[in-house]
Image (cartoon, rainbow, N blue to C red):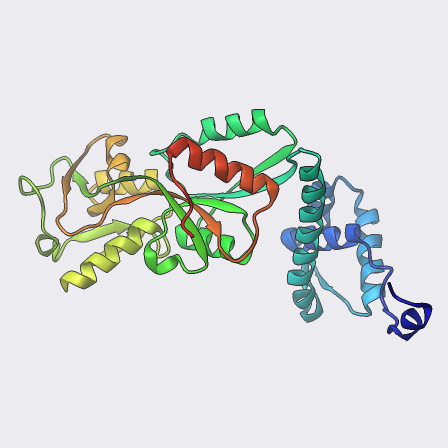
Length: 314
């Protein structure tokens, strides 16, 4: 136990008036770049949010936002505060979760990233079962326009608790991965395209124009690597971050595409062939390896792994 002398020797801490709610207000305003939208998200009147931000800036002795005609943007001081504020709020939420877990209650938030195509698994049923077992958990599915690479980075950085994504081994550093399902990647083409019968070789595709997903998507990463290993260059005519748009462009004759087989089965007017040398694609549950899961994330991971009979990699 600290003596009175020990206590007197501790350095004084300046800026103690800062409150957690002010940090929350700061983070939401940084996310929305607008007092109006942030106030709506927080269910506050705009004047109350402004007072909260001004008080936080006064406590810290620095302006955190630059006010512009288009909204607000972070100053250099605000950029420095944002990661620390996110970290503090996550730690507080984790502490609350731990106390609730001692009482046998799983609560808090489950921030889970979602790849665009989850046709291989029934995510809706998983979420429904989890909600029935743990109604105190708020489930926050978060899509990632940047694809699986973005999801993997967000899990690694702590912006997501878990993710459904396809993570090639080269991306798995700092992550624990459990493969849930897989399927072949195939060549999709318009119905009138002159494709050879049977399996296609990568070399046969030299000179074809491709419709493809942006870099960072799992299927794109696998395709790029396979073509590099085969020594075949390919021309990507257009990149689209939407599965249905990709199918429409292929059907219209804009080019061919290499996509997971389930994408072709759901699309009309397309034919497909297997491509020799292409690895499979699928869906995995992705978790961080460098930090402890929240009680909500741990419970959901247990449900998923039990349902599919898998375990997260060490």
